[in-house]
Length: 353
Length: 168
Image (tube, rainbow over all chains, first blue to last red):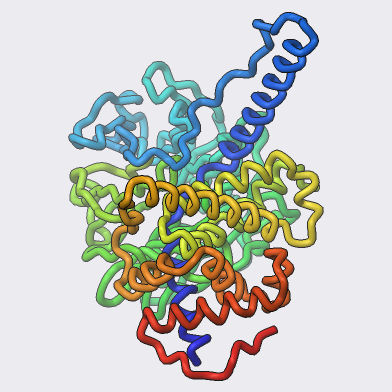
């Protein structure tokens, strides 16, 4: 029995360590390895030169120093985030909650509520939602400037860009009350080609979605049920052969009595954060990747969660709270660093970083 | 087909936290645990085509990380001897009290006993496997486990009266 107790206690301590670990991106590890190899080679070459009486080469084609890969991700939140303010896409200061600059003009349609930010925080994609399809998807620099239309045909919502910046997923919108012909579309930003997935026979009603870190899977929420609205989360392999949502597989169901509200894949870890609305509280659940076990429930809030977004380091989460159905203007936006949540302000639509 | 890079990234993503958890128990300090695990992965990346061919690449990385951990502990011991005092390892915030007690008890054990305890109880290796992993005789592994187990049980106030260590 003592063995079991020790095993349990050691496992518990290890779980705490594993949970608190902040893995740097694998590219940082590989870069460190390459730099070290180069330094060894350079030292060996210098030694050989010295031993043979040759000149020590001063002008070795030195590879650039790595861009200071931190041993652990930087511990500060991004200084600004994107949000819809007055129907326009705006850059908002994380510290003050004030608009730093607007990236778009006054909306032509209903407003620019849907946008995505590249991981290098250089490019913003947004759609100008117009029910009758005269709109499209645009690209604009995070620093501002003229917007460029990248897809004329798309009238899109729920834009989300893959972490490597190569793919933009969105939901096509219908026109004149008719449903869109496809459920999801993925625009390859390198080739300009678009791949579409049709609804399955269930005719799904879809909610937020998020890319997996490898840019292969899309996790999304489906609303269903007669009377009481219920939700479930699915996973779609966008590299698979299927052309409809029937190819999706279900993610683990939420806790009993809870409904899934938001999804965000944590960069660098492969973990998926899921916000759930439960009968007595609202919680954030972290699962170990698709189909994985629940690792923790690190955050509980009083009001229903809205969107969830991790920053590129995966350490800071941006989210909104508010009673279901209330307008954006009444919702609160928060940032959370894993230990404490700080309210930034109210009135931002779809805050993203 | 996955590239060598993808292969390493997937291995890294799957193993990093598990190894940090194990080294955290050995070292009692999260920063040091992450440092030694990152160092081990850096070395694995340098020789990945060879390491990936091993039956259990994670065991290789763990072995390197444990060696690094010993270096860290030796350095701390030398500092202790030189300075006459050593600041206690920084404990991560918000650990439950029983975990803090366990880490403190582990820190009081010799490093050789800690690694046997971790390999046996956490990694779930048999004593034979522990001995092979550490390249020590089976009897040495068994005695280190028994001593470590006894000391840990005493420090945690657990009952250690039981049959002898039997998993061999």
